[in-house]
Image (cartoon, rainbow, N blue to C red; front, side):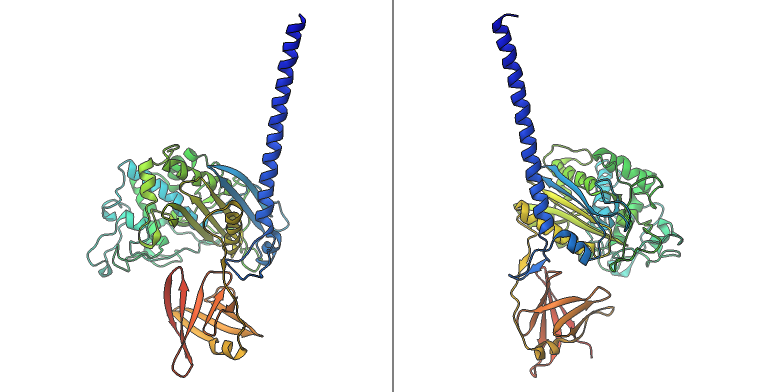
Length: 489
């Protein structure tokens, strides 16, 4: 080898080493930046509403305070998963949560199931704007005077405007008899929920109905003659790459690892995970990283880049906000120029939340294995929004004022939101507390001599007084809506 060839060889080697070194340096910098994001997100949690002096709370301490043993988080940035981490344990005294730990998704089952239903619409096997009874075979939705002669359509079921009953499902503990889907639809034993029927005129009112999605489950089965878990695997889960997800109920032996569900007081749900024959409404087992794939599939489908399940046109149809700001299976929020799609989920001992932006490829998924985990999931989503500069989900800042105890004493009482749901305000020392139905008590903070707010939830309560200053009722202010509740004697 002459000296010029040797010099060229050395030059090539040096160039290769330099490129490799630069690549390693870039990877280290990227890893450092991602770790900085993780540290910022997990070190500073707040409630939905804050006052100017509220301190940050680390994730670990908030998990302990809210009795949430385990959390799984996936963050999407610029169209790709930036990080997935598990925190805490899948079971008290057991293994740590990992990216492969499976959780029940609760009502997040609905938007994933809706994708399968819309694929059947694409294929001409179902129709969005036709009487569902024309497509139901194994069961028919009974007529109702409340419908005023109007049929219920698939579009209305997917947007919660079909006027159907049954908000949600408690599931069936291990050892309990599990009803068939038709028994659930008819409210027949051993079903533990009422019959799914029409209670308001279709298309006139938004009312969240897990019952409506249970009807769509029957429609999907009738249209394909397949079991629901197989249909969802073949049409949605497998094409997207959701390898750690299933609609099988209960979870098949050997599939997992799976988290153990817990109650809000930290005790395990008796018998473990409940079984949900209402699979479209509540039956999905999945991971945060798999749900991130679902979010990204929608984002890419909107751009026409990855239409593994739905066409770009059908995905756009799914994301159109209608009554109540709901699309076909997903809730739509954000500014008109920068919308996001989202859904939460609550099953016995499992609570979760996902968010995906339609245009700039950002989003996140949070899954927990405890009742009340939605509160923590919301706080984590806020921390992610702050760290990554999202335009939404940031804490609301309010000003707390000092009022005399005598003012707070006037608020004490029971207020009827409905015949079966009350707000109860009470004083514990000098702290005003609220108990909504059977939910845990929450502190309420005065912002005037007639209005209080919560920190855990972005709501305000305005107390209505008569001309003698006696409180006769309240007005609930939430999401731009007002709801009146009279004081009970």
